[in-house]
Amino acid sequence: MLSNASKYAIRSVLFLAENSSKNKKYGAKIIAEELEIPLHFIAKLLQQLARVNVISSSKGPHGGFYTAKKNLQNNVCAILDEIESGNVFEPCFMGLPQCGDENPCPVHHIVAPFKDALLEKFKHQSISEFSREIKEDGSLLSLKGID
Amino acid sequence: MLSNASKYAIRSVLFLAENSSKNKKYGAKIIAEELEIPLHFIAKLLQQLARVNVISSSKGPHGGFYTAKKNLQNNVCAILDEIESGNVFEPCFMGLPQCGDENPCPVHHIVAPFKDALLEKFKHQSISEFSREIKEDGSLLSLKGID
DNA sequence: CTTATAAAAGATATTTTAGTCTTTTATATA
DNA sequence: TATATAAAAGACTAAAATATCTTTTATAAG
Image 1: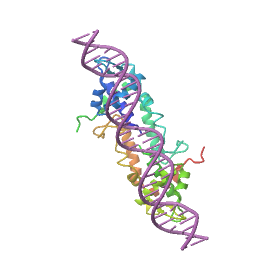
Image 2 (image 1 turned 60 degrees about the vertical axis):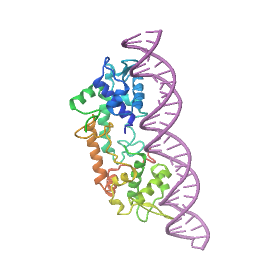
Image 3 (image 1 turned 45 degrees about the vertical axis):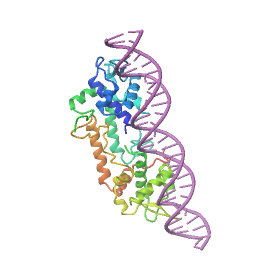
Image 4 (image 1 turned 180 degrees about the vertical axis):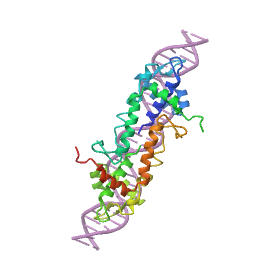
């Protein structure tokens, strides 16, 4: 459903939300190591996200990527809008064009509630809220160091 | 989540389950037209499925693909096992290797029940049961002719 | 002002998925 | 037995996704 690019991007932004600040920046290299994702690939994605103000960046020594307060007001859909082409949630699970409540595919009744729940989260929960929830729930962005 | 190949294959098998029999076979061409999917692509997939007895086929005039009674005892997973490489439901939605109940990614609690429901259906419901449900529910395998 | 650092930009390579085309083989039927 | 039909098989092409490599630009710090 999500491309690797989106998965990497989401995890990176949430990592920055949890760990970075205006004076605690992270280079692409650190992020790649921390999340165990390809360096050059995530570098490109972070640059894209910085260009559209989903995250912030600064060049040079002590430079890197970080989330400023205004960045944290964004939601996951802002990431997907930049990385993915077209609505990730639109295509039917079975490949039926125009599948919907009126013309449901054979698994529509299972898939639709799932998509709704996820869309609700990605569209209406801010990155900062999402990040806080992650900390509270103890869910993970990386399994580095966990056997 | 599913490749186009799997989507085409599942819809084709369900189409055959609903419409075909030992003496009512469908050529790849008809199936492609009926489901609005690429002819040569689905032809290959149907051949693959016939080879592993998920469906049946016969060559020559009045030949084609069909589901014999024993074919209908299969389930959707049998299709996926043949078409997909590796378990479709295993990879984590966020890309975390080893994501699970113990080490959940940030959307695991939303994704896991969905996967369970779908896996239950694909693994424990036979093609014939699935096909009957589709007829009862009035769900669709194609939107050909529907505006 | 020089240097080291790290993002920005852009070109290239690789892999996977998707889709097409051609030839061969089996078979029902006329 | 000749012919038309349709699956089987295999080679090939195209597009998208994934990933890497190189060069340029900005900037903090010595």
